[in-house]
Amino acid sequence: MNDNHSEAYDEHEDPEGQDGQDGQANRKEREERPGGTGDVGDAHRGGHEPYGDTPAGPGTPGGPGTPGGPTDGTGSGPSHPHPDQPPRIPLPRASLEDTGQPLPPLEELPKPPPLVLEHPVLKSLLGAWALAACSAEETAAVEDHLGFCGACADEALRLREAVGLLHPPESLDLDPGLRTRVLEGCLDRRPPRIPVPEWAAPYDAEAARLDALLRDMGDAEWHAPVRLRWFEADEATSRRTTVAGVIAHLLTVDGLVALALGLDDPLGDVTARTPTPAARTEAYWRGSHFPPTRSVRAPWREQSHDLVRTVSFTGGGAGKLSVAYGDFELPLHDAMLDRAFECWVHAEDIAEAVDYPYEPPSPRHLNRMIDLAARMLPTALAVRRRYGLASRGVGRHLVPAGAPGRSLRLEIEGRGGGEWLIPLDSPAAVGSAAHEVAHVALDGVEFCQLAAGHVSPEEAAAGQVGDREAIRDVLFAAASLSRM
Image (cartoon, rainbow, N blue to C red; front, side, top):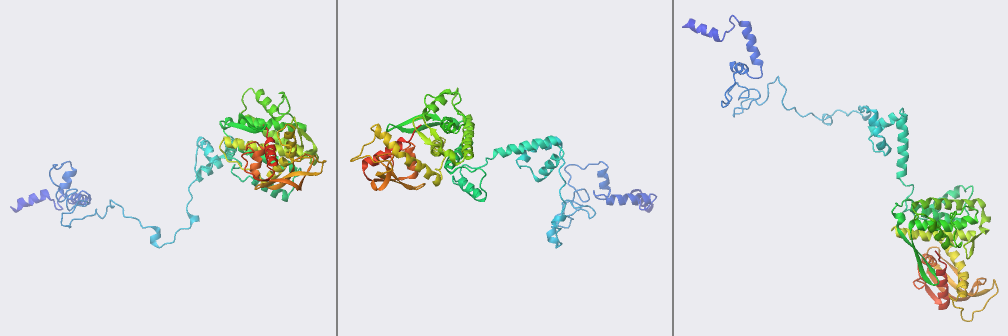
């Protein structure tokens, strides 16, 4: 029995038998394998698969009591992998702020490597670079590339110039007096080599303001309908045109001043029936093959610059020239004020057509325009009296030239305000407070609207005291100053 038992033992366990060294090596290898120890693990690895319904037992991979397997329900089984194996879920790393160690200084932090981009990619980034829409790394890469690529450098320069055109140099919502204040501040520091005469400054300012309004208009707005309004024989008259047609009207009437200064006539070969502003405008409109478009802005703008430049070069003596309006004449300094007034009035017509706010001129320039209208009232009264449109007045008598006569006190309130004594009986008479027979008070802008034919004499909100006929004559004479 003992011998047989010994043989069976030797056959199965071979404890350091004839294969002692090989057996120890095999047992050590089986124990170190992560799949468990013993012959069951060897059989599993040899290809003997357990039945699908057979639960995993002790010592089988994934079974209770094995590394990586669940516990046996008593909590005695291991719940972590083998000590020599890494954990399946890494433990969270401690933040550098929690260790108490000093943080590295910012300048020692590693900088990101520069971008290395191909030429087509860099070329495609030029548009974004011109708009300042690239990242810091892309900007550095593009600018480094421009240093040695001439074609891309030329393209980048063109794109930057195009981007500059997208931003208007000034806003239309600026204070209308800002330009005057800036110029005055500059002139206080260093006067211009060729200063603009003071009587030409209102036209220079109003032309610049109108040009700023026109600059941002779209093509459709140039064809917006505009109705020109004025009074003729005590009746309201109007003429329909477009924004471009209004600029053409200003171009042709400003041409009367250009002719007086020896400049080119904007009508060119077109001939007007009479040299009046209305006839010249109608001739220009008829001579155009197509209705005026935004292209009319360029010649009007260039002519306005030429007028200011010419009167500046000729000095104060040029103001004594006469400008013929067909049926009357004005000295050049008054004609420039008249053109400033018309420029402002028609700019308001355009702004109303395109639904854009527009401010009156500066008080100083508005005062000069009101003064011109007040000085023209006696002549307008005489013309209306000649045609039977004004009363002769009770006890009216002619006075010698330069002598005082019946007068109306015109008081202008608000912007550009002041007082004027208007002689009623003769253009050659002198207004006199001692012979005052009536007093009228009006707002400055409303008086200009009356003189432009945009407000009727009956609708003018005027404070009135004194001779009613004299007051009516003066208000209708102011409306008669308007024209196309």
